[in-house]
Length: 131
Image (cartoon, rainbow, N blue to C red; front, side, top):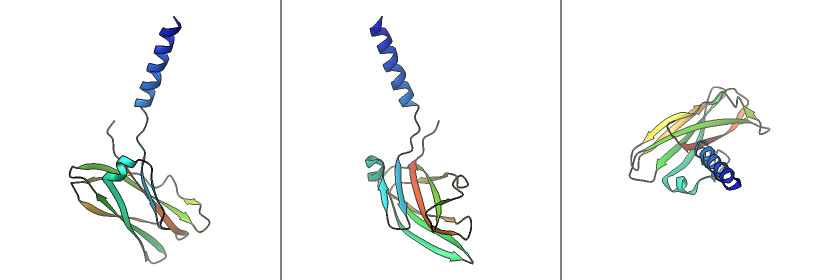
């Protein structure tokens, strides 16, 4: 009886793990830091050429997302803006954007700061999975 309960418990853990969100990806910030949460994904995609421009009193962020593989990739990206104290500005206001890259393709993405207090940004790229 104990073995049956153990098998059932292991099966539930495996099923719960299979339902987990796939969020590991690549983060790059305007301060020059890059973090790769998934090394396999890091070999497929790169994020670089991070730049900022200004239009009036608002900043605009730019980043280049590049495929390193010959197959199509379905990705999502999101920008997060920070003020001079390092606090997130409008954290829930920026939604994930979809992006499809064909083999070895690169695409520039951008985002406007939500308000004039923004001083730096971070862009996060992850693989998109359909539910």
